[in-house]
Figure 1: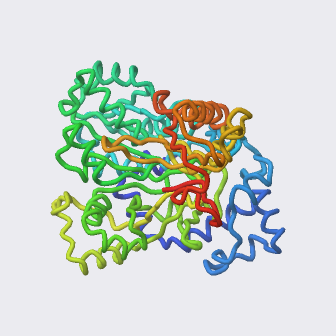
Figure 2: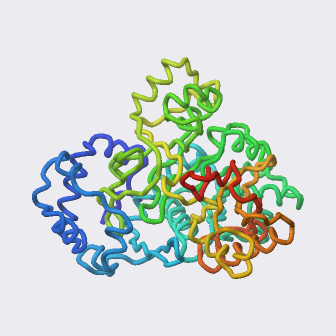
Figure 3: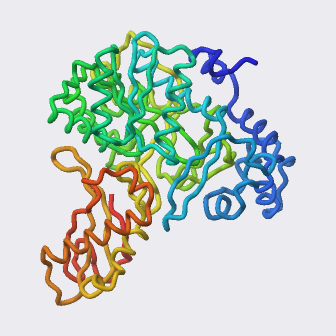
Amino acid sequence: MPNPFLDTSLDDRLAQHAALDGQTALIDWFRATAATVPAYRHFLAGHGLAPENVATYEDFARLPLTDKPNYMHAYPLPERCRGGSLLDCDRVAVSSGSTGQPTFWPRSVRHEFDIALRFEQVFRDSFQAHERSTLAVVCFALGNWVGGLYTASCLWHLGQKGYPLLVATPGNNKAEIFRVVRELAPHFEQTVLLGYPPFVKDVIDAGLAEGIDWPQHRIKLVFAGEVFSEEWRSLVGQRTGSTAMCYDSASLYGTADGGVLGNETPLSIAIRRFLAQHPQAARELFGESRLPTLVQYDPLSRYFELHEGTLVVSGDNGLPLFRYHIADKGGLVGHAELLAFLADHGAKLADYGLDPARPTRALPFAYVFGRADFTVSYYGANIYPENIAVGLEQPDIQAFATGKFVLEVRETPAGDSELRVAVELLPGIAADMGKAARLAESIRAQLLRLNSEFANYTPPERQTPRMELRPFGDAEYFPVGVKHRYTRR
């Protein structure tokens, strides 16, 4: 039986998708799938709706949004699958919730083939891996968490398709990564490291200290899970010997529930590098002074909508997603629309690393600032205020802290990510190193206990937060009479 991924070239597959109308395909898929998912039928019925009455895209766009509380946590796992059974799936990933209660995301190999197209775009369009022998080193945490095994499996599919690719899976173990690179990288024309941005930088820095000559291995990088600056990309690229910033790295936009939703391309990176140098144009485009991740996406794979400045996605998976609110703040820009914007601002993308001799793909763009809720992302782990609060609720901590805090991730001058927690002290209590150390250890212990992503994604040497002890009512972090926000970006 023909396999649409294995038996069709990337160019032909994307051309097939481009020939279809995304909205029409979305409705066809919805009507074919919704009637077979018991939980979604019940969800719609609760809103007085039936799948057979959704005939147009306008009908679909009026359907209620789904999310974790009203759908994923409201119905048993099998009922959210086709036919009300897990037997349609053959693998599962896990993500941590705010209390450490895991959420399970089953899928099958056919769902991976769809996501493998995103990896193929990066490996072919950016890295030319169809023409170069390539060692791919998976540096994401292995186990039930979505990053490591999902990535490895999609890369194995590329190997099945004929790419000259060897996949190594040391996970986030630096000693094993170095062992793989030393032993295997000399036998390949290029080596790709795939992992969370701060961990990959740790690997590169530690490898340099151990005498690894990264440039001789023609290093390429694939990131996921974090927004980073173009200055950071340049810094890491300098240490790996990058000579083509738009073609030597790419970031994936993915979630445990939806898989990979979009990916950086040489075009999107060149645009982002232009915008990094033209902050007024970036603010005009994105509405904020900070720079989001900018990716291209395939509407036939993941269909995006906007809801109050946040992203909503629909797509096929082990748990089919219909108008699923992923709580990421961001936006959407059409391909022609963005190119017209750049032309109006005099952008010459060749000046920012885009090779005019290499073709680009006319896919739409999505931009992502990060979670619109109160989580922060650190080494790919979502860290929740609730996790931190438990660390401050211990009896010995309550003797000197109010329980109010501000959680943030900062980039150090060296380009490393650092988890910081500012804590408000009780009135009349003075800060000292002993209190800071007790707080840091209490928070670290509770994060390890409650958040399996933190425990497995974050290197042990990066797990202890940097503490800032602030006086009661501190004007910068804890102003009196103002609604408190527990995270800062």
